[in-house]
Image (cartoon, rainbow, N blue to C red; front, side):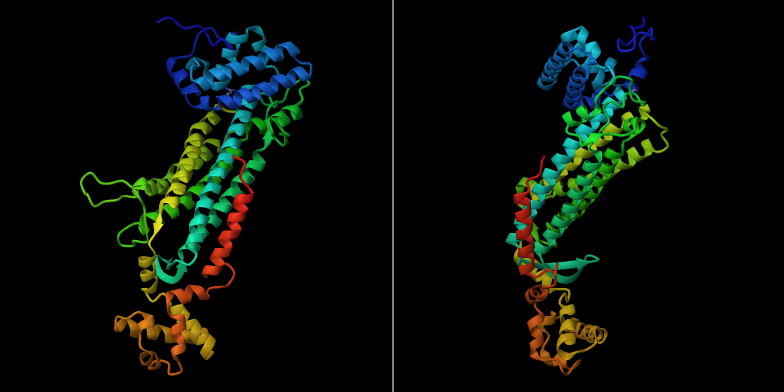
Length: 469
Ligand code: ARG
């Protein structure tokens, strides 16, 4: 086999092309081509700045910017000849630009390196994805808020240790996720704010001797400012790590909610029904309705948190500045961001689709002696018992009800009075699950009026501040 000629981008010093396996391990075009729009945008800003600073001719910059537009259109149309020999998206775009416009293309790479280029492109890409995730999170919040408003008074059992604990409302339970997703959005917004400094112009690692205007390129690319240290600019991957950390926490939240959807939709719970839109059947068991979308959303946290872990291990121990190790940042990040976006969309669809079943939820809420705390509170409030004594008396009453196989609100008054003679019929006003939830009016409590108020205030916030994405 004869050797192929050297790479045209650095052919000056190289005489033959890399070994096949070298090309395979080295190339990133297979995955980084999805950053082509960001690469083109950043290159246009760089070319314009070079001309404004008098580093290249205005006519050359115009030809470069026009040519980049054409290359971008080819990529968008899907008829761009991506080449593995050209390694990555940066060299693919530049090499095609040369074919399209000729000599001026060679001036584009003045005062920059692929090191600051890739950092800039990736930041632009991640920033857009954060905006998209923020919009998806807001959409899921709104779906939850709407369901919660419709079910502010729908009583269900609340659990601790997955044992029936105290009655809550279905709306309250859904609103808990609205709060979590709100914090997820906050974490992503923090990551976005710290990310928003432009590395372009840091060049390979040391800056450049050309009189570039980094503030101009930062502004053109909607960054708050240029980064302040050239070494840090090309070796920092905090922005994607931080985004993946926020994404992992968010995916963990979705996983918990997905697990509840799986549980609630079992015949044993029967709290919700999902339609054919979000379930699958079994090829052998005709009665089955499987919540596959919920199960897959529950699972996505594995690859998302895995991506975070994977990149942490890549970055650990890397000396400054750029090392090729850092090319490993993209595949895991793309996969994690895609997975989170998909899970968010699926969860939003399921929230819209789910039909809460009020009767089984209420029946379950009354079981398991879930109003025992209400009884103890009544003993404290009305009979002025210390809570610890009330807890003890209630325990004995629950045991009596259990022995007779009765729910608490069906145990006859004399049976209660046998344990505590001062109990009156007034106690029955607190023993039903409906009365229990109605009494939880403390800030953040589950009383239907609280839930309705919280949901309405969230809806206003969500409707009045549409996210960027
Ligand atoms: N494809 C590379 C990456 O993703 C671009 C930067 C290459 N820089 C270099 N000096 N080889 O990291």
